[in-house]
Image 1 (cartoon, rainbow, N blue to C red):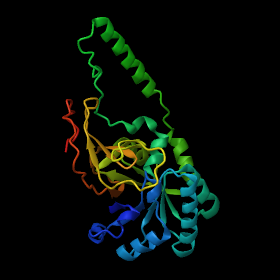
Image 2 (image 1 turned 180 degrees about the vertical axis):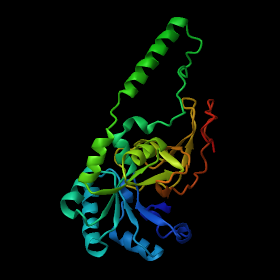
Image 3 (image 1 turned 45 degrees about the vertical axis):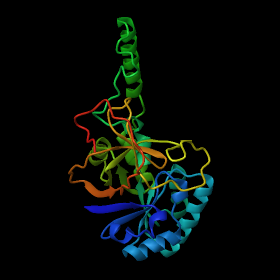
Image 4 (image 1 turned 120 degrees about the vertical axis):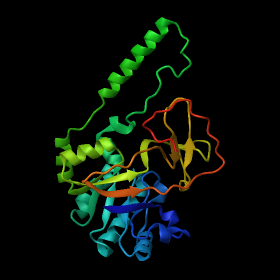
Length: 292
């Protein structure tokens, strides 16, 4: 099984980077920050550092970020044909298909696999308590209303689109995709049972949601001109029964590693703790969820 390390372009010259990437495939880029998208200069630096081509990792792209990717792909097509690209943007996928089909090895990133299965962004086994709003002592009629509301919400969640695997197989074939990536055991099983794709699994954090809230600025940042920080902020709230983490433009929860014959590559996110944050104790717990 291949082992890969996520590496932001901002960390290429870091003191501990040579040891971090030793004997590992390097995923160069960022899934959530448009200011951490790689250049060919970054590509060449990692290739010199590790002795092999890095995997280019993209995110949802703005127009300026898309233009930078167009330049990167043009240079890679000349100087590093056959490089692997993890695509998390439909527009970029179509661009590569229209201009460089067969020139790169394509992987469908975890943002895209969740796009096909939006229902499964929630951790199995973790629940939001029904009466967390302080309604525990409410009259029976109010409790009945809350229970009806919960059933309605669950019905709505169950009705969210789940793309049929037959369509997904056709999509993968249409765009000549060779690998799919996920951080969900459920989705891993879906692709291992329903396709012959190579499959990557992200560990130890699973994507829960994307956000524009910056814990370092302290609010919603609609126009940010700086790269996201590298630190991981641990969050705890009484409204959730599992720990939540903030990093860049995304929220994560811990996931579990498992053994499977189709697990072709493990993609590891290096964790850098952020000091100075004192989260509230979590009132709820779930026995099957890791807490540290």
